[in-house]
Amino acid sequence: MENHTSFKSWPEAAPRLIAVAAGRAFADVVIRGGQWVNVHSREVLPGHDIAIAEGRFACIAPDLGHCIGPETEVIEARGRFMLPGLCDAHMHIESGMLTPAEFAAAVIPHGTTSMFTDPHEIANVLGLAGVRMMHDEALLQPVNIFTQMPSCAPSAPGLETTGFEITPEDVAEAMGWPGIIGLGEMMNFPGVVAGDAKMLAEIAATQTAGKTVGGHYASPDLGRAFAAYAAGGPADDHEGTCEADAIARVRQGMRSMMRLGSAWYDVAAQITAVTEKGLDPRNFILCTDDCHSGTLVHEGHMNRVYRHAVACGCDPLVALQMCTINTASHFGLERELGSITPGRRADLILTSDLRALPVEQVIARGLTVARDGVLLANCPHYPWPVTARQTVHLGKHLTAQDFAIAAPEGANTVTARVIGVVENQAPTKALIAKMDVADGLVPADAARDLAQIALVERHRGSGAVVNGFVSGFGYTGRMAMASTVAHDSHHMIVVGTDREQMAAAANRLGQLGGGITVWKDGAELAHVALPIAGLMSDAPAATVADAAARMVAAMADCGCTLNNAYMQHSLLALVVIPELRISDLGLVDVTTFKLTELFT
Image (cartoon, rainbow, N blue to C red; front, side):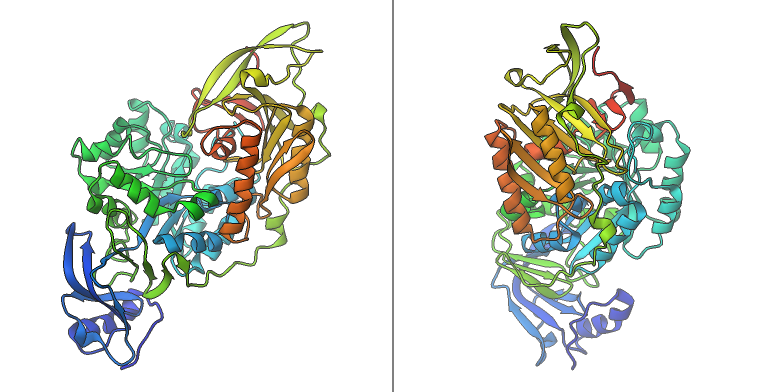
């Protein structure tokens, strides 16, 4: 009998899967003598074999010796656990500062075999064309990368200006693409609550296509506003930060997605809804949301989230369901992936410890793609065009004067609104600070942890700069940090204690074509080049992680002690998460969704 190793759709594979299970044909691969972790029945069944054909599971039974032919690859499990490949239910590839190919190469050795990605970062920079580039590279990979069509570019119309806008027509068009699984997180929750026609049209186009609408309700109000949002159609939400948030979501028929990213630590506070309150775990899902390259290289991906959930008291089998079958079911793919059962894609991890989860071998679509942390598969690249690599348009050479904050005429002191960074959380605080005036200008006050923040317009080359203040980074001395990763509109955010350093940092990113740079006392300490849309590098994850590590060290050299402070920096323009943010139009009060003045 012929040995087939190519991955086929279920209709194409079904005749042979049936023949293998019935004993009429040999399998391509047989894994012998393992412990079958069954996420449908939530049990571990020792002494089982798994037969794989056409990249799919054909059958699982105590003895499948009859499936082994002369060309069958035999893998000895030797009593190890055989569990489904891990699924990340909500994530942004761009947050890893990597292209889809390099992101896949980084996470495959950690056991991630399915990702549900929302490329709304590149949508803000390059529009529908950028989404298509991400989608097309995703489909080239040896693992499953499904794309959610971004819903909100801009995320808050009238409060920011993006490089491109996403329309309901764009959403309807994308729903016909082969790798589109649904609508990306509906961040404009005030628009949904208000019955905004554009937002509802995007949701309707998605539901008409029979696909899943992603949610994003970043408000503590669980009253009428939340009820209205749930009625608007989002099927899940990852913005919960406490047990009450998780409970409210599942009670309203939504999936509660609990995230552990590089900077978001929201699992421990919410998983008690299952571990202590005893709610049905089928409606709870684990995800990462945002992971930078350093986390992927040094700590892991969904295996890291799984271990954390177990450490928080979750039963290992329940935690595994939350990052396999629960995710697959949520996106309508329960018959396609998320479990080791007949007909599903043959995505599997071999591990010797179900709690610590050392990822010893990873199989995706029936092929071994990693072993003992080493990638064995090829992750092809998309030919990114020049239009994707030249996206930083400053319009002029910036000077210190562009970052000067003028005080009201005649004032000796001012009362300023200040963005307050909260460690390990996405929300900020709206702070008030009295500040001194010098020569008609209001300078940063590093001694009081009051740095300047500026948003530099970079899509249209207008040369516009919006200035304000931020607290929480702890910067000292003469320094500045600039980044073209500035969720979600992705202009350029510059934070610093010295206007000349801020100008130097901004101009440097213009030269690099995007990325991150840290300056101190007139010299660049470190930079991360992100030439694709100013968001990503097509270099290997380890290379980007090394540059990012130098960037983090440079931030510390400037006095910053926050955990994953870069992630906080990149979200300072995210005008859909309370309380105070900055955009190209000014300071934004996200509690009222209105622009506000710098000085009170």
